[in-house]
Image (cartoon, rainbow, N blue to C red; front, side):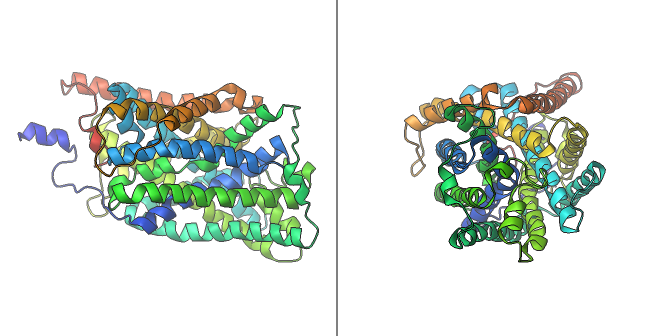
Length: 482
């Protein structure tokens, strides 16, 4: 191999080592469950219950069905192509258009950043409530959220091994918090104060029919079902992905939906119908109200905000971990500026990519927080779902196209109809009919973030063409994160 070819394969030079392979089946399961369970259930349960009333568990179930169908496509693709590029890899192999591959990869990055930004605002509200500030000002919440994002950057700079170990602790804490909510719901129902009959009552504040109301609520609930794209992007840091991924991903999704449905039933049974859509603190979420109303004589409400802090911190950590590594991979392959592909010599963490994604998150949090016409958590969580639904639509289509490639022995294969169903359902949930008028800001946020990516691509294209006299495109899409 020539010196030129060697440089093309590693823009950092031969002295820079690659990322670590540290995830076994238990860590991967906790990674997936922790990512799915994190901020989603805290952020969206109240809002979707406000759209459908007592059948709040149904949108979670429908979202789970759509997510599971898409997960089957991911499982077929990740076992056929066990590399870390995830959706970008599948898009490239299916369509072969470098710019489209870049757009998909950058969309995944943006979804991680919007999800982490949602978590930071949710965390800030709960942290301030935990310290006795039940009605924090916008400025106080904003500053707290920004500081949290800086803390996340510091943790990610320590490296993936430390980040995933921290994820284990946070996952156990968030499962404890949700177990408290479910336990309180069961206790309230058992003592006769909860109205279990409400879980079959459909109510729509806008007089929508059942189908459209559930459609809107499902689009909201989809934010709480993300997680498998993050896990796919960690595949090259996982031991034996061909054997581990199918069982672990489906197990993680099953655990998550069971917990979600029990939480939704607890919310509906404990909180009077008219109060679900209007929690005490919209940014802190509805689960805190379940604790206060269901167990007013217990000091749990003093502890629960801090448990929520740990839970949503977990989601943000995983999202920023994934986003920074995808930026790193694209810079390594000269489709983003090379400066974003530098790695710390000792820690082997992609420090410039972490810096870039952190700055993007800080700007996003600030802009959306200062927009008084929108709920920060609602706008950012909805944007995350919007971005990922677009990616999942493409992944399902790619799964169908890539059936032309031979399947390795032992690889997972989804039932033939599932990718078709997944593509249609995800595309349907992308439309404006699946959103309220107040949620149209999600399209603006998504467009603004993608515009940043297109500008960076254009700058890289100009640099590659004018300075290096080379084309811009993925040289080694199979190893986007190596």
